[in-house]
Length: 159
Image 1 (tube, helix red, strand yellow):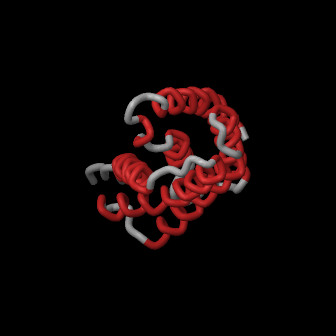
Image 2 (image 1 turned 90 degrees about the horizontal axis):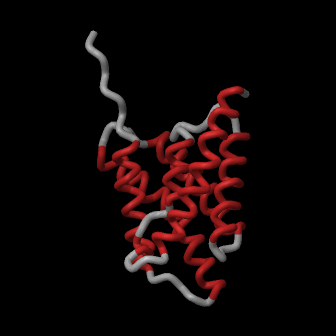
């Protein structure tokens, strides 16, 4: 329980700052091409093999979706569903593929980023301003590149 409290003390302010930064960067020229900062934080905060219990990932997905929807006009249901499906995809893919190959980590990151991109597409259709497919593809590739760099296995010690 103490570990979760320490994690929350770090993740709550970081998630709020990242949500504001994402909002600011998305309003700049070329900002629509940037990846979802909340998704990257979610992938960083929850290990790919899954958490010890279901409570922390569930609450963190709920928190990130609420923060993201509080800053943007997107319905929170799209954020929650996109983040939750991204975690499920990543967890399932991690069980079947080796994380030692950079190409497989890239593919795992790209496929895990597809559900939130589809939820963003559905949300943009609901708002009447659909996102072009090339923007969503580039966002998925950004997440894949960052994930393949973040998820590198640690170096083994001598011995």
